[in-house]
Length: 468
Image (cartoon, rainbow, N blue to C red; front, side):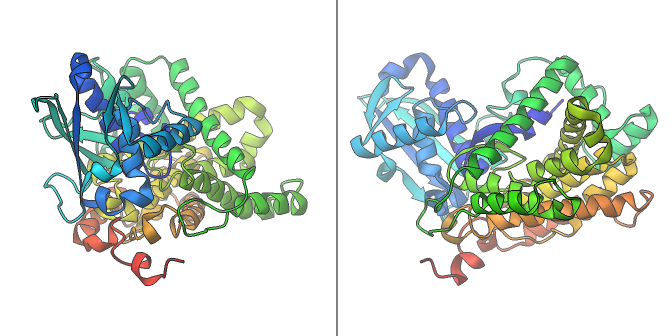
């Protein structure tokens, strides 16, 4: 299977999957590329291109590269370790390459080229390692293509680095190969399967047991929940210089007073709370689940929260029903995410925020429609509605920080997901615009969109709002 649900949902750190997680993963892969000659490395050269350079300061890109060069990986490193390592490197000007060899190198030594866009993707990173005599030990160009996915210049097949699919050497059997919504619907109807069952069959074909898949997805959901809970305990202001106030903590205290018994009338407030909490944690460099990107990490947890707390059969069925709903929701969302990765992009630097918040909203809408008992056609309709009304959404974060408008945008995106799922459930699955058509439109819109609206901090709110 080309793309696994565990590629789309990965544990990492904030604030950005393409600008933090991807560069860290690339730099760590470069350490592996040097391999047995790590002890011979005496000098490093780092060139950062395009959007990675333009918004690298606000997105934590440069520190992420240094962390990767020390061998840190986004799914393993903890926020406290990030803080310790970055503080040490900033003070000493020394990076421990592969966590073994001390080399004088700092952010100031990186060549930042924001106006140079390489042909393959705007998020590009070029790394070289040299010996004391200047001999080149290793050289590679990496592209962070969204959602933490990284491809290399030298790899003609553009294998994904650092993900479930990319790290596996197995030859997976894909019983239900699909790359479009029409193919997914045809397979589901021909085989008598729901969307989540199609995705599950492909995960099993990739060599996992059903229990491994379920355990893995429940772990992902647990990390999402822990991320929100950790954020709710934190108050004050977010880092970065904008003095953006954390709101989730105070909102949670108020909601516990106003809605102690979880009255359904307050569902939107709880959904907003989860989305804000997750993205405040992401903005502070905390531990999050890329879903399918960090900038949109709050939407799927917020809509999953709705599914687990406001759908009757889930509420009435106890823990077993909650687990079943979680698995179905995430597998369905993952299947829809595959369509965006195969047919368009989930990179804000490539197609704007429609590729991040839009794709996450679409994935969440489909997942919720499944939990609500929707047919495969209703699931597809829900996903289509959500993206259709995110078309043209720009990526213009103020100061390059994943804070304004990103945090609120996740709450709005989650609300759209729930509304789209409910609209689809009131229909019979027959609708005018297909999911494939809206994905193709999103891709074309992204291609036509001015680069200043694609995660460069050169347009929109990023230039029209005074930083203070």
